[in-house]
Length: 377
Image (tube, rainbow, N blue to C red):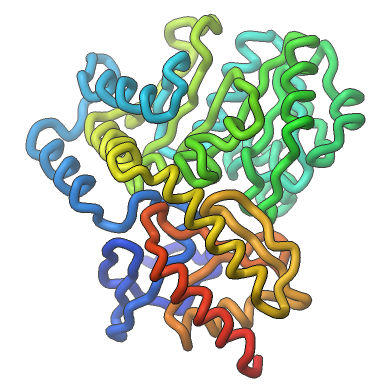
């Protein structure tokens, strides 16, 4: 038996990780400027995270949601305070795609409608409803069909006005498009979506799965734009590597008992992971730190030749080359021991370091990138 070969993989065999570094079977130390698709928020094997997880495993690892867990309430208290979004209730699951699926169900339950408006170039997941809301045809099997989805250009208010009507259940937008290449809508567009959804009785869903948890320099990217969504989706950085996600539902939206359910979501160990992450973000001021380090990186990138369209917020940054980025990313990994990411746009390099990345590590990244850009391809 072998793992099903459906992933394109780095030529890399990891043995351990710590902080912002990966260690492989060849004895190399690799600076992690990708965080496994932005999952590692507070750093690999953070001591507080590990201690929290070990203590929880000794006490209570799992039971179903048929019983109450103090761990869920503790998470809500800490997370509500850190995020500034205490007026939401959490439905916890295991992955970003589940968070999106449940968000879409919430919108349909509340409005009684089936139509979704989403953004072109977006990515929301690979499960049935999420895949249909994602502009990537190869992730949809024939069975992933039937949802009434209208895709509009990101930032196009006229298209939004034409698409959003009294049949719309929800509008869904990523805080910053990740797989789509680090693209963010302007504040006026966010505010237009909020007004249009109110006007037509639809919900506004913010997919913050990659852009949330402090990565943008605020806890959520929508907080840069002065809006309050009805539903928020989180995963990735929420558990720092432990599979945990949540659909945040604005308090006051009616949801009946039994309308959502999960076997593993919100188990005590998942709650311990998510609580530890929120505590570290709070106690180490990682949101503010991400904003400062992001500004430093963008200024440094702007000084390098051959890079264009440098963009992003905080520690969610992209830039373009005038050719496919694969060769540069491979050189960074194998010659300079730095791992970076790509996007659907082949010329784009995506960087998503842990929020705790230091100034010296950012300086090292910029120095090595400059060397890689100067050397022959």
